[in-house]
Length: 268
Ligand SMILES: C[S@@+](CC[C@H](N)C(=O)[O-])C[C@H]1O[C@@H](n2cnc3c(N)ncnc32)[C@H](O)[C@@H]1O
Image (cartoon, rainbow, N blue to C red):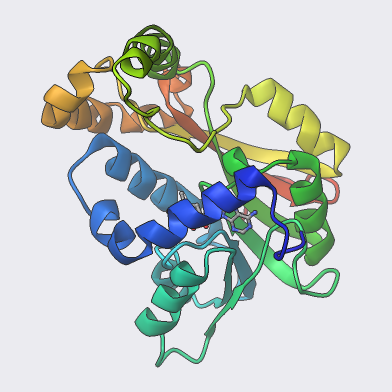
């Protein structure tokens, strides 16, 4: 991606996350369903990687580095890349004394690393903002070594909360526009069906090893904002459904893929 001429979506996304860099970590540690869901996807990611031998891990769209400590604790050397410069400043400030953590401003569509550089890649909360899913997956595949694992998160289209939220805003936004109020968010944000994303991954040469759902928000918009604690606590009760029969209620899924043929499963 050419930074000097970002598409309008990329520019909006970069500005949004530049503006959020200073308070993202505080929000992330908060009591909301959204923050709890983001922590849960981090936990699921670390669980999947925990039995890998220490190696080189790339965290793409690393934000202020919310995953970095966990990866370092597992013994990995970490490279964090994000296209929002303010996010990278946060990372450098937080990990300035850590010689095994390296950070750079960069875009997922044009990573400044050699082929086959990493043993594992994490990409949490990023793909939904991209103009081109295929371009990003091609790059992840290129920099991952054969046999390496990548964990990618996707917002889940069929989560009941998401379908209701979309309908609610479709009904409410025309009224807001009449009142001269701006859309709730200018940044568009894709949602994914697991089967379609699996097909995209297969097309790029990835083999799916694991899928785990997170973010079980069931209190519908706008009640979720009025009852945030209830929304969050119902969500926590259902976290155990990550791979259970109710998994498809989750607002997002972590998909773990391998570059190269499938093996006997994740390292135990
Ligand atoms: C929702 S935040 C997720 C941060 C962190 N990974 C987490 O789990 O909370 C999305 C991050 O992806 C970054 N991002 C979005 N599009 C990107 C792109 N094309 N290349 C690199 N980073 C991107 C944003 O700047 C932002 O910091």
